[in-house]
Amino acid sequence: MTRPLATRAITVGACLGTAALAACTYTSPATTTLDYAPSDGIKAEVGEITVLNALVVSSGQGAPGVLVAGLVNSGDEATTVSLGVAGDPEVVVIELAPAESVLLGTGDGDDAIIPVIDGVDVVSGATVELTITVPQGGGALDVAVPVYPPVREYADILPPEPAASPEPAAAEPQTSPGSSPDAAPGTGTATDSAPPADDG
Image (tube, rainbow, N blue to C red; front, side, top):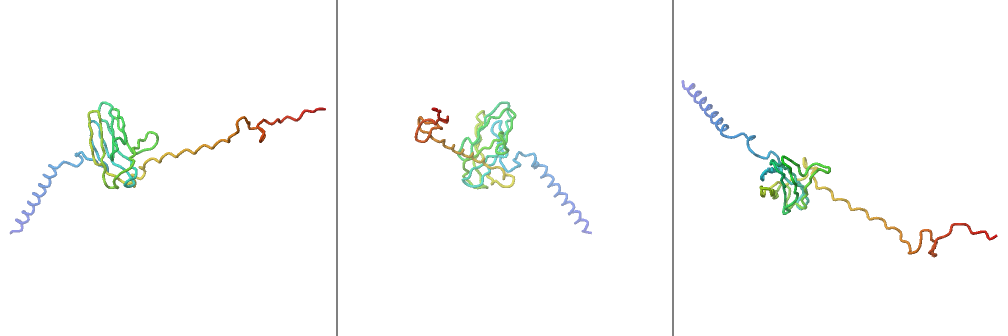
């Protein structure tokens, strides 16, 4: 006679547990509704400028690095953005037109913008301070961005190779003053190639 009561108690307990879980889900917003950076880099906003997926790619401490980021101007006016890393306040300075977006650190060709950091003072896996400056009403913001090694999806993100030094020009042969290329050795006068006159 007690089994139905026990079964009923278990059923009621299960229903209450399900209701409690449903209540927790109802009061907790879905992750997709939260403002977060779904990538390796950092997201930041300064005034009308949004910085997306900001990170640094470097092969090691003391080695040069490349700043990778996306910049979006959501305002109605052209805006200048300055990004500085590791003590260099102007790694890159760029002007964005209204509603314009650009990618930094990726791509190739003449249109690619590759901001190079002379020397990253931390190892891969650590963070460096990125200073975002927007003079037109945005002010400045410091954020910590991660440093990644140039592997996997970042394997092709490397600082540009330095331009090769031009080969020195070959020295031209020197001639004595007053001489000509046809001068006979030791005479300093031009040789006459015409045959001698016939005295007869």
